[in-house]
Length: 80
Image (cartoon, rainbow, N blue to C red; front, side, top):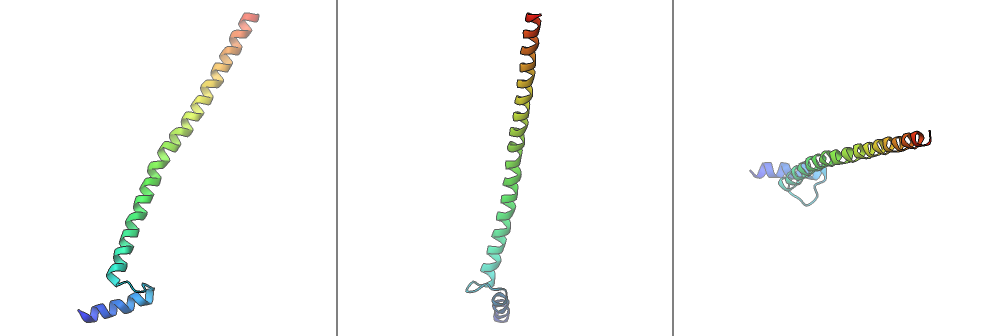
C-alpha cells in the first residue's frame, strides 16, 4: 500500500497537485466535473426562457403592427 501511495505522490507532484494527496486531487477533479455538468444544465435551462422572451417580443411587435394597420384601415373607411 505504501508503494502505491508513494507512486501516487510522485504522480501528483508531476501534475502539480502540490500539498494535496492524489485522493484529494481526484475528489476535487470529480467535483469540478460535476460542477461543469451542472453549469451546462443550468445554461441549457436558462436558454429556454430567453428564447420564449424573444418569441413574445416578436409576437407583440406583430400584433402591434396588425393593430396599427387595422386603425389605419378604419380611418381610411371613415374618411372615404
